[in-house]
Image (cartoon, rainbow, N blue to C red; front, side, top):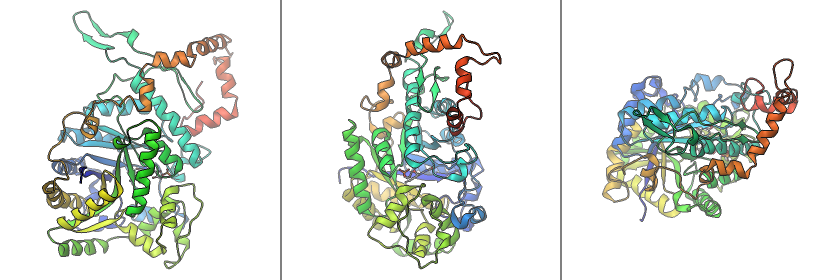
Amino acid sequence: MSKTIRFNAFEMNCVAHQSPGVWSHPRDRSAQYKDLDYWTDLAKILEKGLFDSIFIADVIGYYDVYKGSNYHALQQAAQIPVNDPLQLAAPIAMVTDHLGIGITASTTFEHPYTFARRLSTADHHTKGRLAWNVVTSYLESGAKNISEGGLRKHANRYEVAAEYVEVLYKLFEGSWEADAIVRDKENRIFTHPEKVHEIGHRGKYFDVPGYHLCEPSPQRTPVLFQAGASGPGKAFAAQHAECVFVAAPSKNVLKDYVADVRHQAAAAGRDPAKVLIYNLVTVIVDETDEKAQAKFEEYRRYTSYDGSLVFMSGWTGVDFGQYAPTDLVKKVETNAIVSAIEHLAGGSKTWTIEELATWGGIGGLGPVFVGSAATVADILQAWIEETDADGFNLAYAVAHETFEDIVTHLVPELQRRGVYQQQYAPGTLREKLFGEGPLLPETHPAAAFRDIEKVKREANYEANRGADRDASHEAHPEGRTAEATKRADDPAHVQRSRRDGQAQVIA
Ligand SMILES: Cc1cc2nc3c(=O)[nH]c(=O)nc-3n(C[C@H](O)[C@H](O)[C@H](O)COP(=O)(O)O)c2cc1C
C-alpha cells in the first residue's frame, strides 16, 4: 500500500453527535460538551493518536422534519442544544501543538466580511492550524430565523457559496501585502498603508469595497474542508476543497465519488492527488473481535430509534415518521442533502425504515467497523486500496471512549504495518497535510486574487467607483445618498440583503 491512512475526529459542540441516544450510556461524556475540559481532554487524546484534525461540525437550526416537529430532537438532544464551534479553536490550540482544528461555518448565515475576521483571528491564535469546513446549510428551521424567504434552493446555495469564498479569498490573499506590517519601533511605523488594499468587491450577493481587518494569518486562507456530494456540491469541492468529506456507506459508492472528485479537480487545473478525501466511519475496537463486538452490542442498547430518524429526516428532508418501520425508503425530490437520499435510495441495497434507523443509530450515515485492531486495520486498508480515498473521518459512539480505544489499539497496529504516520510533520496544518508551504498553491482559485490591484484593474473597478462617487454627490434629504435610496427602495435588493443575513438594507 503506497499511501498512509489519515484520521480526523468528527465532533460537534453538542451531545452525542452522530449516535443519538448514546449520551445516556453510563461512560459517555458528551453531555459535558459545555465544559472546556471535555474538549481539551479530547484534543490531547487525538494528538497522542496523531490525528490530522478534530473536525467540528455545526448546524444553524434544529431537526424538525421528523413527525413534523422538533419534539424528538429536543428530547434526545439530537444536535440541539448546540454551541458555537469556532470558540473551541483557542482552548484546543492551547493544549496541543500539532492537531488541526476544523471548524464548520455556513455561507448562508453570516456576512463574509465579519466572518473573515473571525477566521483570521482563529488562524492567528492556533498558529496556522485552522481549517474551515465550508457548508451551505440544509435546515429550513435555521434559515427561517434569519431570512424571510427561508432556505434558498440547493443550486442557488452553491452560487452564493462561490461568491462568498471569492470575497474571503480577496480579503485573505490580496488585501494585505506580505510586507505591509513592519512593527518598526525606531521609525514608529507599524504598517505601510500603501501596502494595504481595498478589495473592491461588487457582486451579485455581496458588496465589500474595503480591506480586511486582520493582518495576514499564518495560512492566510485556512485549510478548506468541504463535504458537497451532489452535482453542484462535488463541483464546488473539486474547485475549492483541500480536504473533502464524504459519508459513503460502501466501497463502491466511495470509489465512484473519489474518482469523480479527482477527475473534476484535475479538470479545474488542480493536482487531484492533493485533494484529500476522508470517508465517515465509526470504529469500535478492542483487544479481541469478541470484546469489540460485545462493546458494540452494549452501545446499541442505548441508541434511540426516534433520534436516528430525526437525523435521517433532517438530512434528507423526508419525514420518515410518516412510514411504518417495514416500509421501503423510496427516492424522493428533496431540497435538503440531495446526496444523502441518492446514496440510500439509489444504491444497490433496498432499505426499510427500520434498517435506516438502525444504520443511523451509531455513526450517522457512515458504516461501523467492529473488531480487534488487526480486523479493523484490514478493513481500513482495503477501503483505501480499493477506493483511492485518503483516510477516515471517525465518529464516536461513546465520548471519549471510542477515540481512546482507537488511539490505544488501532493506531499502533496501523503504525506497525507502516500505513500510519509515526510523527507529525512540522509547520501549519496545510504544511502537515501537503508537505508544501503554508499558503494555498498557485493552482488554487484563491491564488488569482493575490494581486488585488490587478484584479480590480481588470474589473475596471476604479471607473465604476468614479461613477458611484458622482451618484453620491446627489445627497438625499434624509441623509442617504441617491444610490442608497435607489437600493433601499428596490424590493429585490431588500430581499437579497435579508437573505444574506443582514438585518437592514445596507446603504
Ligand atoms: C462528513 C460530513 C460532514 C458534514 N458536516 C456538515 C456540517 O457540519 N454542517 C452542515 O451544515 N453540513 C454538513 N455536511 C453536509 C454537507 O455540507 C453537504 O451539504 C452534504 O454532504 C450534501 O451535499 P450537497 O450539499 O452537495 O447536497 C456534512 C456532510 C458530510 C458527508
